[in-house]
Image (cartoon, rainbow, N blue to C red; front, side, top):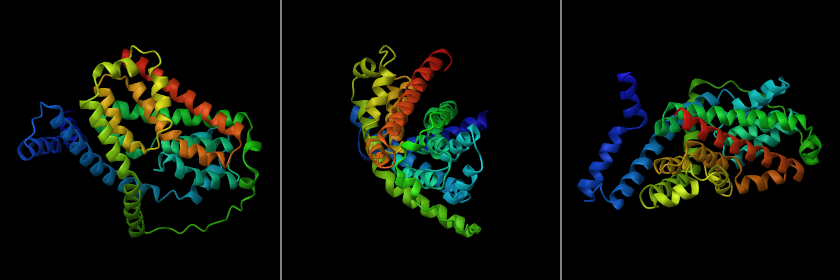
Length: 334
């Protein structure tokens, strides 16, 4: 347990980095850690460096694993499994794809045009932006293993149930006809060498890093502001446990925001520090990553209004139920 605690503190939480940044703030910037400015500067520098380090390392290893699951192979895997097993597999494969909600939609189109079950493709579409392994490890470093596991598990459950409902409603006719008419080209899968997979992982790190670094800076900046400048009373009144609508508010605040999940983690960290329930925070994160306005606009070009409204309703209701459920569970046990 002592070894595990040391690894958790020094590797995941990076206490060594916390101490170095504190020295930088106090000795170099001449700021006291007892002031709002000092704490804000420390929060920003520490979180940015920590997230950048963890993100680069984790995406490299996760991308290496993903090299075994290109879209063509994923199509074959999903195409051979029907029923709820297809929904489960679609949701689990979504975890292995570090796509934001917008970049998941072209993959979704490819799956539909290839004739994959609609429910399984929606399970993939929900889980892909909502949860991934890199986010899981980042959440572990910030909130601990229990919260990280809960986030991934609830995200997968929402994705599976959402896909099952859409399949049961038999909504194929609500997919735009041109999508079904696309030619699903057969691509010969080339076996990648060890060097190819390493190169693929490096490219993925550069690509994802170039897409998310701005959101991380913005998210950490907002988190620092919430953590040190926003009055506790305002947070508690709006999102605290005393407000029965806190989960609803957090979910619908998150939906218009277009950001990567990595940019929401520092905001979540600051909200939890202010006393916001973990379920409320997770609802906010899921709202941001799953139903951003740009992704819904893109999806509206692929599916008809009834299917789009069904997707929004299922995802929103699922996120809200998860939020209230986690708040209740955390009140009892966490």
